[in-house]
Image 1 (cartoon, one colour):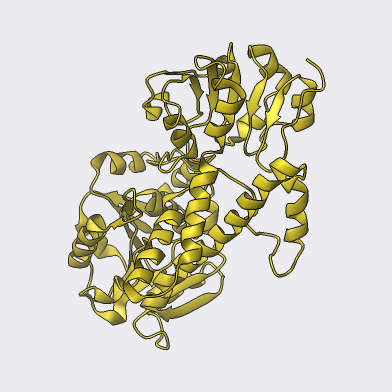
Image 2 (cartoon, rainbow, N blue to C red; image 1 turned 60 degrees about the vertical axis):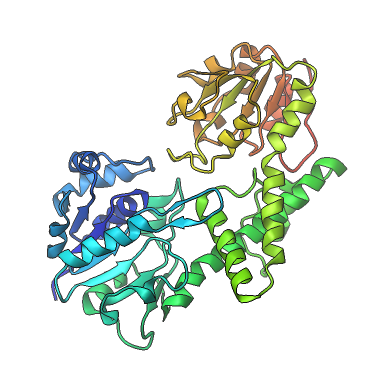
Length: 429
């Protein structure tokens, strides 16, 4: 059998990165999207999203790819992935309208022997309800991580595949494609696979909630969470890759959506989800750390003090601002005077009346009474704390993710506030 042609219906963050990994594995790809601007950009090897290594793969593998605004292009494919991003509202509810529309268009265009795979995250019960031949219909758990999307798609830990009959073999083209990635394959019923994605995210949230709860305690009693976390990672019951870095709440729509889904399902079926509600409450409390701290150390005494903010994206190495802790913090400081920098996100994304944007992070820090580093972009780690101190008027730095070299910041005369430990005072002014 010749190598199957793999289609992606929806060249979103999920679709583009999945397509890039597929190209890198040597397959031909057909990418369909309704947005003509997205398709035009992809034809010139310009992705609609920011991810390390993405544009380079698209450029190097361009001869293997075909991009179209016409769903009929999917007729050339042996396997078609539905790969649109799923929007969520403020209560974590998924908007499945685009998913349903995309499935309908893709199914109408596909060959009668082609396989349809739902890759975007959907609630339990969604795939089984689709009016599509079940022997050719699968649900695959996506593992998208913003800022690491190409690597995650190219080097998956395992494939979790939802099937109508987990004991039946996958279609030959689909099986050949998955085999090219050389990782374990876990077939299971549709509902199990859909819930498996939620289960994974719940475990991640549990780890983050432990880290946030105890890191906050460290800040008050003189302990340092950065000293404790390595001990936990050496415990085999927890593991070296555990999510144990404290943060500003649970970032990213998928985690919040999955918690909301579990709460709604538990209410519908009479099960207990008290621990999940506690995780949500802990996340909301921890997200307010920056606003609470900057009010206490600066704004209560000087409400008009100019402040610099580095980072608007929801995490480093991505353009996305959905559920950004940075933007959530700025919304809590409506009367503040802000000087903003982000390598990718424009200052206008903050929609803050007192904000101005700067092209250089040190220019943003110039004259500021305080600096808040709210997205841990790698380039911020390279900046000498002495240059930061020279640019600022004040000495307060809120660095929740420990981006700066702490001893260097203290030597430069900065007062450093970081999640998980007491403030680090300047060693000299």
